[in-house]
Structures are given as C-alpha cells and as structure tokens.
Length: 157
Image 1 (cartoon, rainbow, N blue to C red):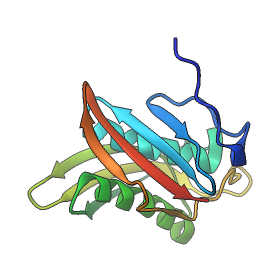
Image 2 (cartoon, rainbow, N blue to C red; image 1 turned 135 degrees about the horizontal axis):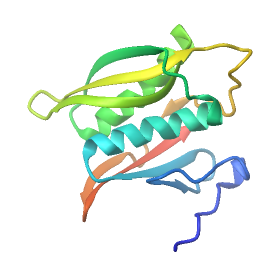
Image 3 (spheres, rainbow, N blue to C red; image 1 turned 90 degrees about the vertical axis):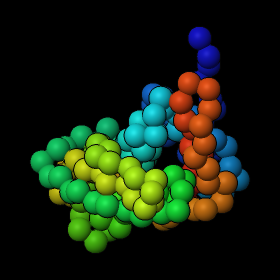
C-alpha cells in the first residue's frame, strides 16, 4: 500500500484522498495529476477533483444538468477548457458541479461533449472551501501511460 502524498503547504489539512488523484506540491498554486483507464475517466475524475476542491463534500447534488461541447487542439486543451467552463458556470450561473459524463470525444474536429451534473448554488448549503481563479497552461499535459492515461494540471488559487 502506497502512503498518501503530502498535501501542498498552502492547504495543509485541506486535501483528501480521491481515487486517481495525486496532489502535487507547488510554490504558489495547486497542482494535481489525474489517472484513469480511459480519457473519459481522466476527464470525469478531474471534474470531481475540482468540485471537491471548491466545495469539499458539499458538491453532491444532481438536480441540474448541462450538456456542453468544447473544442481544443489536444486532450490537454480540452481538459483545461472543461475545467475553466466549470469555473465560469459557477461564477456566472451559480452552477455547482458534482460530476460529469463524457458523451463523445472526436479527435477529428477536436471536440468534447460532456454532460455535467450538479445543482444551483445555495449559500445556506454550499460553502466555498477553496477559490480557484484559473486553470493554467503551465505544466498542462494529457498523455497515455501503461494501463491508461494521466493528465497534469496546475490551478491558480
């Protein structure tokens, strides 16, 4: 059994153990790696990790769904766009994402269609644990590895 990775110093005690997620130390921001057996699994785990970072265990509702199609030249860019879209929908529409289903990814035109599950922000029930300002391009990667795929992301907190 592998020991859990250390939490980054700026959020000591605030991060937990999520399947397929490795928290990475970084001087000013928060990085993480997402592993999955398929690209879809990586996308879904990254959404779950961001939801957890934002709201902890409070991001569980599934009363609303949004279906989005995002475009990017690479899987890494599509993943970044997906997570940026989560931040945008939270800020503008008050949509608290809980999970995602990948409906289709087409390499030919660089599109990713995803269904997000969540609920409307309710200040009586939702407390923002950690604000995420942006998903950066620094260190952004999405690569095959033995047994699946791994993505690396850095968030500006």
